[in-house]
Image 1 (tube, one colour):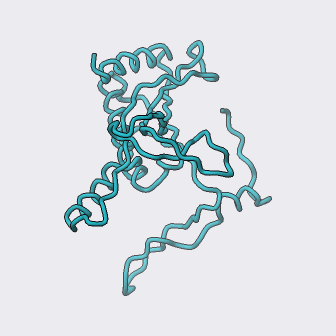
Image 2 (image 1 turned 45 degrees about the horizontal axis):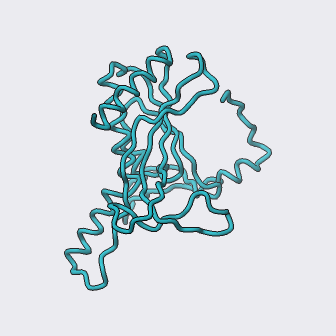
Length: 215
């Protein structure tokens, strides 16, 4: 049986067991499978996610992107179990040698754009949305939580319709207002407006009240 057919059956059962609750909750992140063979396809040295915070340990393995759907307990909102419905190999692109030609370097840079995690993750989001539509859930919203690796312009600007993305950003991330429209101004178009407080500054600001949410 093909992997897509296996996940298709699991995906349908998870949504059906949730009793048609709206929206559908999903989670996407990359995971590492440790390997030993140096000739296994797509392997390389990668950061160990289980390593201590004060040191960067490296392990030999393969990188995959996984998407899971939340299976609600007793079809009610609250505790849930994450059930994998997508698992795809996402190996890093190998750098060309120092003797590589300009054409080989150009191919490497183009592959970097197409095969990096955020680009592959975006394709998987679109694929999941299309699969849910084919399953008869066109009007059901998909709420997807992701890591900071996918909270970027490339992913946000290409989100398909009826998909809400919940992502993590740095607490010292630079935030800006939209630029004010200007008429008759020379030079390049402005992309940034006035600078806004960082998320950490907003958290520490006593004038900004907390907004309680049910989670």
